[in-house]
Amino acid sequence: MQTVTQKSKEAYFTASQGQLIWSRFRKQKAAMIAGFILVTLILLGVFADFVGPYNPTISGANKDYTNGAPQMPMFCDHNGCSARPFIYGVKRERSFATNFRWVSTIDTEDRRYVQWFVKGDDYKWFGVTFNRHLFGVEGGTIHLFGTDDTGKDIFSRTLHAIKTSLAVGTMGVVISFVLALVIGGIAGYYGGVIDGVLQMITDAIRTVPAIPLFMALAAFVPDTWSAEMRFFFISIILGLIGWPTLARRVRTHLLVERTQDYVLAAQLSGAGSGHIIRRHLLPSFTSYIIVDLVISFPYMVLSETALSFIGLGLKDPVTSLGVLLQNTTNADVLLNYQWYFIPVLFFVALVMAFVFVGDGLRDAADPYSEAKK
Image (cartoon, rainbow, N blue to C red; front, side, top):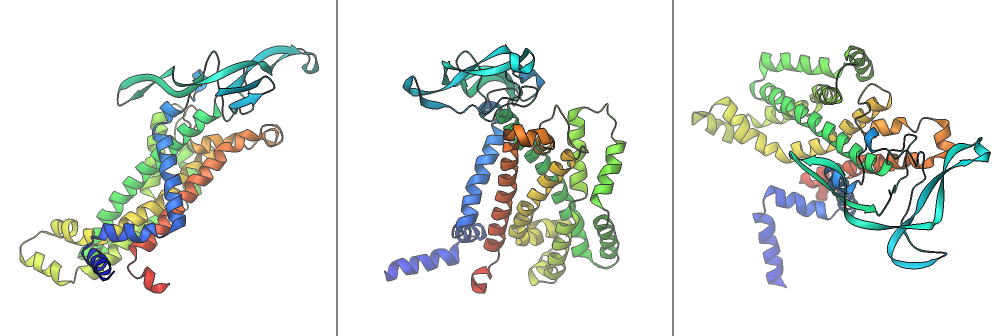
């Protein structure tokens, strides 16, 4: 027992900073569960083309099943049970109740079995074209989350929306990360007049109201811009206004650390300012920078979603969480097509997972967090 205790103590004192953070992070059950959910959602977004059975755009719409309810696979019905999951087929017919308009009805006598790794719509990964999808049904279509008013599969759209929102958030975080490190690092290391000027710029950026800024930019963006150009534009804008908070933290840390002996030793050895900041000062702050990035990620996703929701961000044919949330503003949807709100659950889960993981990492990166409890 004594040997085990000694080994655990030795492992603790010889562990790297990353190992210590991971050890403290694993003790937080909520953060671990949130981390599992977050990784799952990220993987679903990355492999959206493969997991989603259909193209999320107009070209992938099912005209025979518009505003269709979710189709959940089953194993048993009135005809007996099956070892393979199946759904019912859909038939279109004219109804007297709707003045002989075409309506879609469920045919309970038409079983369509779920198949795995089926061929479907083409998609590209790293320039290579594939057409295999995780699942499908023989002789028809399957819509786990139902369809919208144009027949587009909400399940496929939700996965691609996660992918798009994460991509926008990633680009915004990367841009803000680089700006924060450069501006905060220069201000904190040199101080004096340079610090004063950079802090004036930082404060000016922080005082800019976000919504009026986005409304002005939305008026500036021409309608002729492609979806890709609008995507990059929104990402850049989110990054350009998201760096001041992290820059202030980097500046504060460097103002303290620049007077330490190891910095003086590096200066006496002839190391340049850029080398000292990059190789000595910033690495001592790495864990806090990573935590700040994780915490800032949900705010980027929220910003993109809010902009797209009010019509100032991404628009069709690009599928994002904000674009999907636009479809829930109709009262008819709330009364008759509640499955439109399924993407909302994924949006809440994504944001909350980031928040819990960020909080867990923040506590794990704080060496005094256990002493405070």
